Length: 185
Image 1 (cartoon, rainbow, N blue to C red):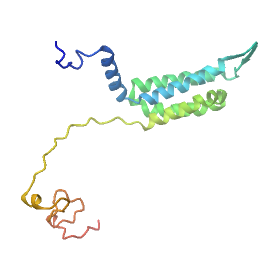
Image 2 (image 1 turned 90 degrees about the vertical axis):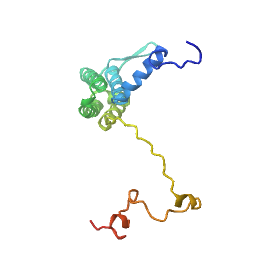
Image 3 (image 1 turned 180 degrees about the vertical axis):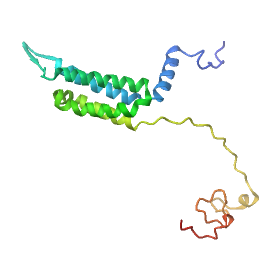
Image 4 (image 1 turned 60 degrees about the vertical axis):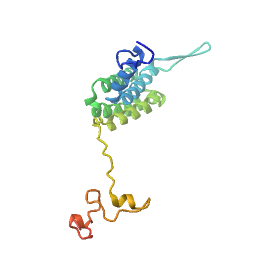
């Protein structure tokens, strides 16, 4: 193989480039960022009620009476985020459930993980509900414009004498049989 030989995609590429291309294709087919936000929202909600903050020799326990409820909400948000990645057809349910769990975390879990988990769960849930799968685009053939004798003789920027019946979007072309009047209905 010489230096002038082009690399064959998928065979002669570096393995990291192939992995990155496959990951981008996988990520583009599902609500990836919504799932990531929901997972990141569940982590502080589940963590803060069990965390101990050390300030010098002083230990500050942030445990609340609803520690089990916080753990359940956080774990459910993480599970919903992972399900958004691997089961994209449950996106509406998972998005609505993430929003509701984020709202419930406000009174249950230290103001929803000190508002960090609450906001991330709300944004991720909204992104999941609003995500729609894209449609595969088919390549459109590009037709070369046909030049006529009248258009070649006209100065640059001049309008054609007769409008094209195919390109007339107003529906008022005489070629359409509309005699220049707009229809009322």
